[in-house]
Length: 371
Image 1 (tube, rainbow, N blue to C red):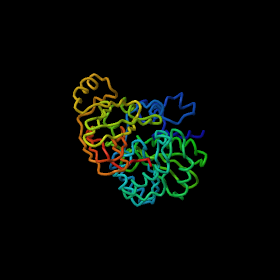
Image 2 (image 1 turned 30 degrees about the horizontal axis):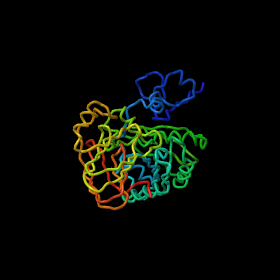
Image 3 (image 1 turned 120 degrees about the horizontal axis):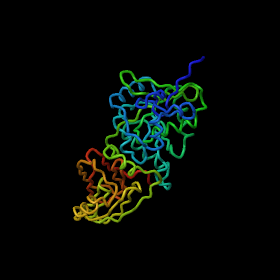
Image 4 (image 1 turned 120 degrees about the vertical axis):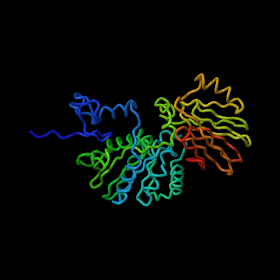
């Protein structure tokens, strides 16, 4: 009797098993025997119910993987999050893959305003990539959730791989696993070669090996740790609140000297000086934004934050860092709090003061995705 072929979880790459619920790759026996899902219980719950802690690749492991892949002339499919760009476009990763063939996959197009132009988005990403010294072969705007532009992504893989391995890299928060699973659903008929996994030498990190097309193989790597994003500093319930699930509806506030915007207790942006300015806020609709006066902050903290009358509220934040931004340009500008929001405005000599949790990136750039 032929030995039954081992089946692999398409989410994490572990061998499926139904004997030990506490071990990797566990799937209930009745589900395994139905043969209609190749996801372990952990990955199934993660994908359908968001029930799991985020897990990331150690930095030294990632560096070794990227170095070895670069030596064999692999192509890097670099997944970034269009909403959380600053935290998922990683400087260490950028440095490691510099000089390689890089395809930037900008995910979560469905979150951005429909009025944004894809070509403008690509121009912004290309500019930022150039600033990082990356020679990007292609930039593909996709939505894994909406199955948007996957044929273009597939065509780019074919064009630039040409028999080379493709390493998919990116932060877990960028939607990398969702994108890979969508790709598998769309293109599994290209080859009947088996999906396999391997432990990277010297580690317990799993690489998911996915044969695609005729000669190319995709390696899906575990997610990159992004401590600069707010999602790494707050509770799971707060992560759900600050992560948009549908198109963001921007709101414009007229700000005068002495005004501020509070985002729950997660952050605040103070308008310290400058002429009256319209600032447009891009943030998840689950985040309550309160406009008030800087002079009234202690009163607002006591009555809104301490009494939890503004959401979201995180108990994990342990102090804030102050970032002062003095505007010296007269063009459209953005202030970004990684993982939470960005605000856009026309530069005119303003001074802003941003309070964000310690370790969270606060950035100031030319306005992204807009004309």
